[in-house]
Image (cartoon, rainbow, N blue to C red; front, side):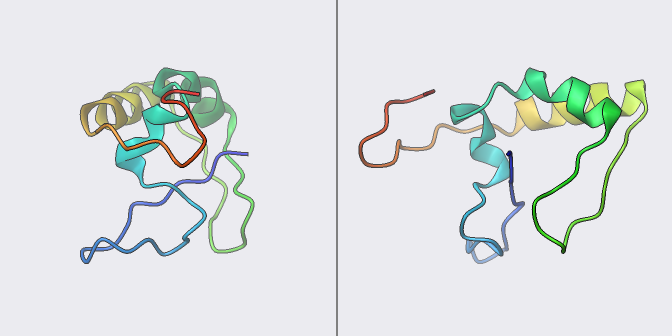
Amino acid sequence: MLTVSRGRRDGRQPNPDAPPFRTLSSKYPVSDLAESLAEGIVSGHPEMPIFVFMPNDVDAIIAYLESIQTTAPPAPGETPNG
C-alpha cells in the first residue's frame, strides 16, 4: 500500500509512517500512479477519503508530483530506488 503525506510547515510529518510527497519517487515511480488516480485511491487510514480523478487531472497531478521530487537519503539497509 502507498501512503504519503504533504508534511507540515515545520517539516514534521502528520503520519510518521508516510513519506513526504517530495520523496515519493525514491520508492515508487510517480508515473505508475496514473491508473490508481483514475480508478480511485483508497487509503489505509480513516483520516483520508477516497479520491477518483478525471484524465486531465491525473496528468496534472503526475506532472506536479514529478516537479517536486527531491532525492531522499535511503533508510539504513536500503538501496536508492529500491
